[in-house]
Length: 419
Ligand code: HGY
Ligand code: MN
Ligand code: MN
Image (tube, rainbow, N blue to C red; front, side):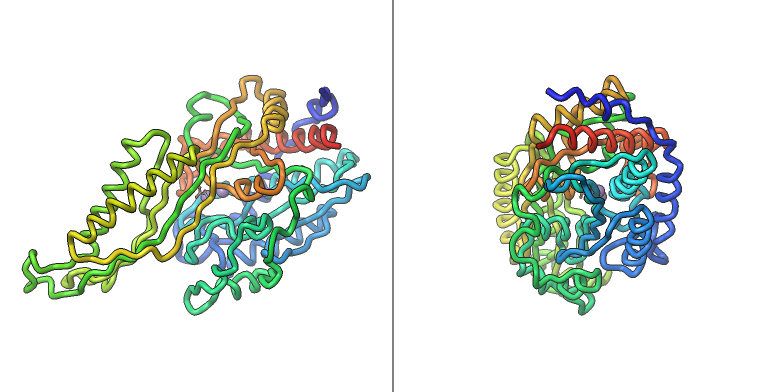
């Protein structure tokens, strides 16, 4: 087994450039939105990526945008080997925080600068990636870029429209070429390994008082958009027994999913998005479009809970004379990182925090897609109070810095370990 001597003694960077970059990227936000909102395909998001592309160039990387719209900056290696890829995403949810995704991208950039400063060359080429549109967006698709890269993107999704703009057009506006999305952009084996540094977004590290974790696996996510069609009627004159209230039926679906996931082992479920028609206080709701998602590390549980939810939703809507239709479904299977890679990452984490944990991710990540084509693992740093997907999301500077150091050491260890 390699001893990773050079990797494990790499100095911890001051973190000042990383903190400054995080602050700089946080200035690119959509106007009149809460927190640090930078969603695909907003102008603020695209402007942030223009800034990032310049920062990549400044760090000596050669940036390009691939067919899926991913911004990839390459550093050359000294041998003819497949690249190691490190990165994450710079889009946010509505009302998101400053670190979800951005830390993984900007720390990857800082790793390159630290290697440059220290005169470190790698045998493998190193790619810093900003994956396009990781968060579930108004098109109803998450991980647009990483799915495209890994070949799990469905071309039928390109026709989806938001405010008259198709997803195809939106990817083009981000510099991508959706016509090229036929099969993976890197065939299995064409990337040596992928690493993603991310905030944990949950409470485990903070509660344990630890600074780092190697991530053993990532939950699978089953996400569906459901259309409930009832009948819009006068809210004063329509007797209760004559109503076909689509929102009342949706309310049953919401509590049903909550009950199923409370009862089921290792499962969480959320209905976080509703569109109500006509959305008028004195009209019985005629139509609801809702998005439901279920997450679990266990694929059998995921399939079973979704099936139970669908059966109970069908019965509850039928009882109210409301029709139920599945409009769209995305399914990301749970991912288990290769044991050797988790061990390598854990060893690196322990060199910086001797009690570093190994834990699974309840959040979805680009790494779930990358794992389909390359050995992939993640590193977590704590989220204060376990909070994320909200403006209060916070990670102490000390932890951001250790996360960057862990990523750098893991890259060096991988460069040594991989043939
Ligand atoms: O939805 C998620 O888990 C993520 O943070 N993209
Ligand atoms: Mn997120
Ligand atoms: Mn994220």
